Length: 198
Image 1 (cartoon, rainbow, N blue to C red):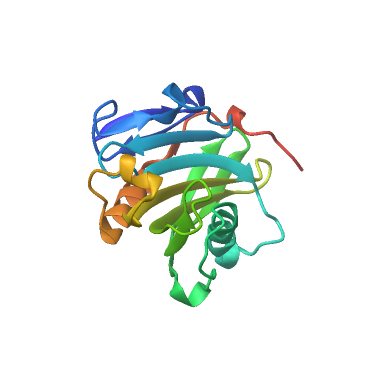
Image 2 (image 1 turned 120 degrees about the vertical axis):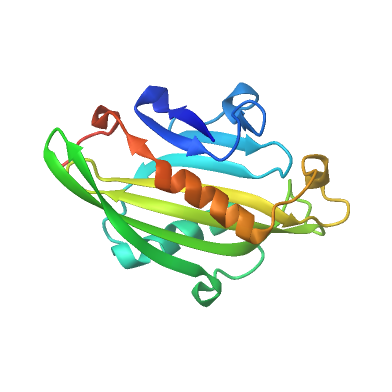
């Protein structure tokens, strides 16, 4: 287990492996947006992303994980339908944070499901990818959805360019357990990271 600093040390999390060996900081070899931290798993080609998103105030807590899973489904241009009945969802115990404005109770939900995704517009080569997320919802005055996700190839289509990056795919249960470890270990050290809103 390794501790990973996030967003300049304002947050941190645990990675289930050795940083620099089992996991690599993706920002060292590709451009990563400022609101994201990304770690690549060495052998499986899985990507773990921690990102800070605008709190979707119009989305109820019970629907929020499904909402963000569908957002990833859309950005991945997944071929299968975003059928909620095919997802595994769970509500975890909320977390109480001690913030400069007093106690803040944050809702935590998780959702997992398979998305069928083509890499680099390879329309005839569709891979099965486990997309599993953990969502931490910060309300007033921080209004941020902290999303922890894993995209883990499970089955690679013959001829897909993804084959170059995947030595040994994870099992679906392994991918879910991996992102759950990261999600449940997230610590917020400095709430100055978040823009305050009314």
